[in-house]
Amino acid sequence: MILGFDDGSRTVAGAEHLLHQVVEKVLGSPAGVVGCTHFVRSGELPHVACSLALPGTAHLDPARLDPALLPEGVLTAEGAALAAAEHAARDGGRVVLFPGRDDLPGTLTVGDLLARTAIDRVLVLAQPEPPADDVVLVTNDHVRPVWRDGLMTLLAMPAPGGRIAPAEVPNPTPCCADHV
Image 1 (cartoon, one colour):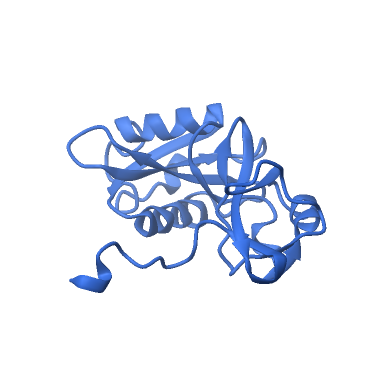
Image 2 (image 1 turned 90 degrees about the vertical axis):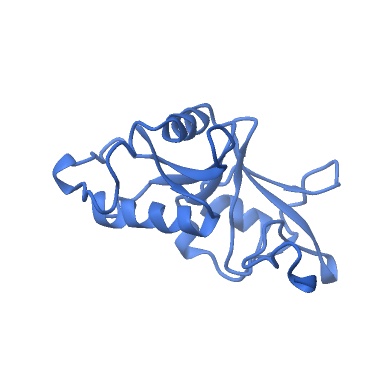
């Protein structure tokens, strides 16, 4: 079961917060959940919607839906439908929650990452071939794969010492921050 929801979050951080709230408060944090954020460009204002793929044994209990957590209509909004469709097709979305995410150390090899998590592959920006299994990945405690070609794919970039790091960094510097 894939659930899409959209509260009109204007930031990725806001959407990730909503995603964590839904998993913890509404679903009770079942194992095996895959949760994503999706950029929605339709409508009046661009924003970020969410999707969740529930494992076969997880069920959404409507009695646990807190109206303050999910405003009326949030489960059927256009952004929610887009998020659910992208997730189902595995062709869009930043994967925030995935099996193995909570057990990632700060540094591990690509082979260990692929063995420990639901991530299917690692691609390094501007490199034609995937990195070898023994290449060291420095996670910075921020691993956000994306759905690409039907596979959960971690995009990485070269890092000092022949290592790699996730291409998405935690707390990026906002555009124009140096000349406001």
